[in-house]
Image 1 (spheres, helix red, strand yellow):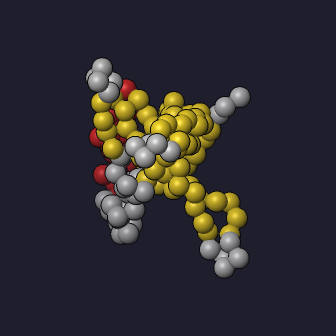
Image 2: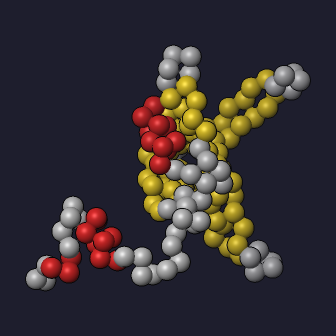
Length: 135
């Protein structure tokens, strides 16, 4: 079984390209925190290359950017290629089957909690204000 689930933040904006046949492919790097603290008491992260294809690739390019919190479900892929200098290079990446957009980039997150909460409540439920519900 080859199944990977990751949650992290993008380290840079996604890079969208198209194959010669016109198929969209996007790559981005995801910073995923390690569960343990290091000897200095700081949290370290792993930086994992993610690849998504077709419509999902276009959605990632349109809606994600550096700092976006994202969940990725997919499979681990290890491939090799011959570099221009003739050396064999190995690449480890996750090929995404599903990408979930979890939050805004850190620089866009409002530190002000009074960021029009009632407007947010309305937007989340198709214009229904939760404060007007009887329960």
